[in-house]
Length: 175
Image (cartoon, rainbow, N blue to C red; front, side):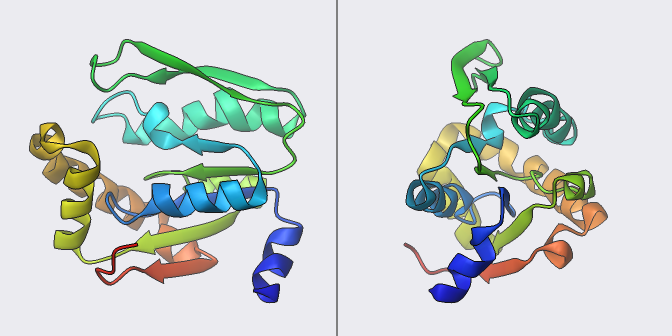
């Protein structure tokens, strides 16, 4: 436990990346709650199922840039059920000394300029798919194969898992 505190002690930005259904949201929620810091979900920044590649740019423009400058950030979350209509407003206080961001594609090489701690979560494909469908519902089943291809290509190109400081393979264990 003490080693983890040392790692996080000076870390301002923690990025939790990995494929869909690997447990990123659960892990990041526990981490953000434990550190008492804001949590940003990439799901709020994608512009639909084809929005993976532009999402980090939106994160940078709407959240990371203002946050690094000490200003508050505010953006309208993507509404998945309404197919893109503006959802609820998400705010990050300017006083937030640390920030946790979770979601597929949150840690491309462009994120390195923020000196983040990168956590990679993974697990067996069938287990991850089951988790994703259990979490979000059957409505997303038709989109998951294309999303998996897009995220696999993105993570491979960005070498996300190889660049991660911490790599966790859930190996199908729930919890």
